[in-house]
Image 1: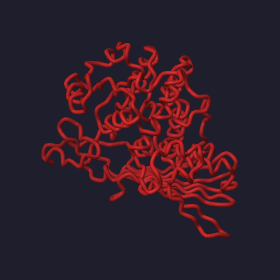
Image 2: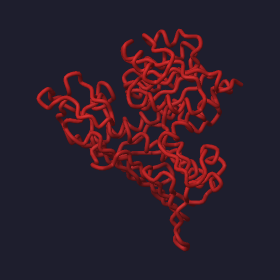
Image 3: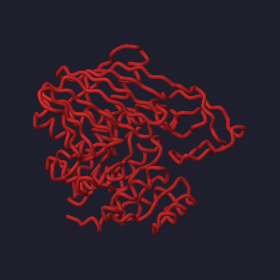
Image 4: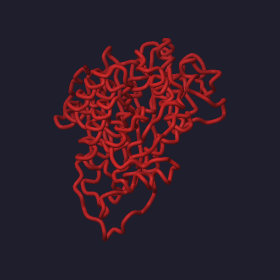
Length: 391
């Protein structure tokens, strides 16, 4: 077993999420050897900005570096397939941002490639699993505290694409895939609810809407995510036709009879990054909101409802080990990445993946693409669509 300080990583991608990975790895004590941007100039600028020793010229240089143990892919979705395959061929562990690929054919190929390298850890960054109270909710379900689950509901809402002048590579189907609100944030919710409930989605009924079929792109086609920058003047922008959805609502049927409903939006004014779920069972209900991440509501019929404040001393052991601060000391979004990487790098340090890891594997990432394909087909047909089982 290797210590974390003897393991080194490289961040591929210099946008919003790359520095999130960097900060979390540093907090864990993992050496970040360098960074790769879309050009050598961007690589060097990012390395200088974040105090890293090296800005790589290209991806081949990253993979040829014998000191690199793992690569973190924080790149546009269209690059994931080729980058993952090259990393596995080079013997590197892979931590890939979601979605894993653009299509189910690509994600199935990556699942097979991961299986051909059983000693390598292959993970997808569904970080929301690692909020401590999400892990505790999972433990309560597993212990039977909720009884039989009747139905589930929830949403993931943001407002960063509210205006037609808001533009990012994610709005392009060629860059990010055919689904956006569902593919970009909805898959986080779908992964989370399956992880907590242990239920598998059997069929879906979806209704999607592109609120802004025309968006105004700046001259270089890029606006950095979540910066709040005004970007290029309106008269310097060009209209771009958009086919990806700004909003989606999905009815769910689960194996075993449970039902669900969820809504995903990137045009909800005032909702910056709001993930909510509620599970209703025969004994109790659970509800959680990522904007108040240290509170888990527990609903009961014959007793007073309870509000559990996150405190490692009160959590199930499976959740407490991913909660590092005492009660009253909030743990939020950056901490979820730290805890996700803690689980991933424990397996990297051990030399192989765990049999049933808490983090999302490539198989989990493929399952989300299968769900997206069913949701897209349901919207096109206006009908219930069965979800093809994952391999």
